[in-house]
Length: 374
Image 1 (tube, helix red, strand yellow):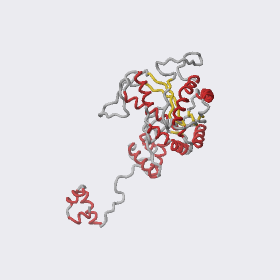
Image 2 (cartoon, helix red, strand yellow):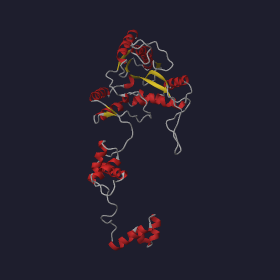
Image 3 (cartoon, helix red, strand yellow):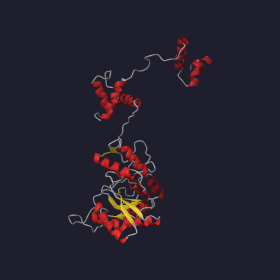
Image 4 (tube, one colour):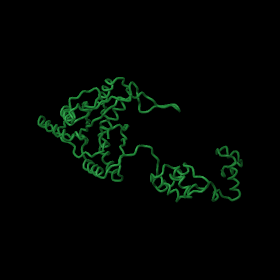
């Protein structure tokens, strides 16, 4: 402002050129004329709402979880006499000073409304660390990941996309059934392709011949039925997919469902006696509470989002849509998922070494919603 005024000697012209209020230019030109400097005076401007020491304590108060929020912290500081004035400071003032103090200390803070991540026990963390350490260099190309998933027929005849644009005041609505029908299925994925789905007890409109411990028709998967799933679908489909690509020795991954352990041993014994040239082993010591380590969880989310967009009108149409969407899973999706395996396990090792909880997050190669069975 001073340089421009020295050039043209016109306050209004300087204000227009620099897009500054005329009085501001006039004040700084007068200051420079009198003092020969353009430094600000000490004490100029609004006083700090909080001292730095108090702002640091505010950060600790917010992180402690003992207060409902910035407003509660402001009321407490006013009550104990840490702030001046006739009323508590506004919550935005508390928030501004807390963020500034945290950033200055090198540990920025933020507020979140997302669901808390699952707190893991020391034993679970130890199992995860041990499993990731032993498998961080594994060749995942010969591993078939398997899982069971329930797809619910929630939106009858309504196409529900991932996002939608709304006018101010509008709400996103869709017809949603209160008593949803569902498809309960087992399937597996490999680097080279997917198995056909195997529908099991728990699927709507499906009659099962398997009995529960009370002798009644089972409403969910049993060990006997899982043995059938392995022997009739997962093992032969895995052999078919891998043999096409010259792989005769491959690994079957399964989670820690109580029905899996006994049934898988029985199914593999039968399989090995009938298929001596196909070597199949089970990925041992799969850690509990670890859906983030299995890429098939991302596949379930992908299929669910695609099916929701279709807007199926009948349950039969919905079941066919689930099957076809899974069977036609793009090869690039499988390639990216298996390509991410090393990073998944290294990230798990780094993360668990620092904190006692894990967030079931998505991976950057693929956008997926959290729709897995933990």
